[in-house]
Amino acid sequence: MMPIDKITAFFTSQDITAERNKQFPDEQFSSDIYAEKSGKSMLILPFTDYFFIHNFDDQPKHLEHFQKLHESARSYVNAQYKVPKALRISVPNIATIAFSMHAFPQDMTDYVQQNTRSVVGGEFHAMYLIDMENKEFYSPGRNTTYVHGEARLIWGSHKEFKRIDPQNRTFYLVERLTQSLFGENLAT
Image (cartoon, rainbow, N blue to C red; front, top):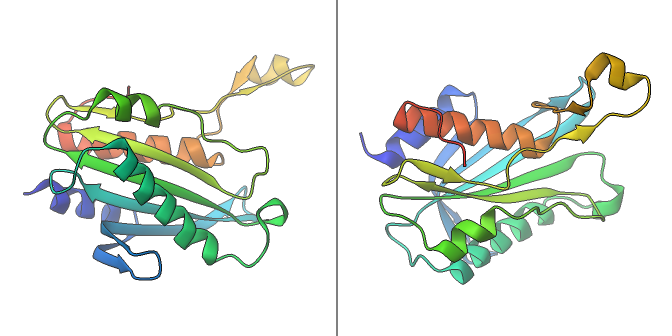
């Protein structure tokens, strides 16, 4: 089975709607796989996760190209929301994922590991690389909350919200995707 077929099947197995060869004419780009999932965090806060997956064996492996794809994805998603970012209750989570049968350049792997959280809020976004040759994935990592005061006795000094925090939700999904592709724990 080809990687694109495996990735599509993985998203479907996670109850995430996945569409192949999705065109976004207003933003003038396409995605080899476009996936979307809506739900609620803590039973009340609505969320939608958007995934734009690109086969970089068919595209130039240049940071600027990947950044342009990600910015186009962000533009598409944010156009769906009429409320200004700072006032949103439903906050979109945008993930641009590139995979390749060959390694990515160092500037791309370094770039995707940077924190993309904004003080304005209103959206979460991150970029991920899946290196099929070396069986690695690159990401901004997980987000941890520091706990202070009496709550520290109950939770400890660090708390990681795996399902509530959009960055963590996406990180663990991509980690499971790489495990399904390669059969081992590969987080970088």
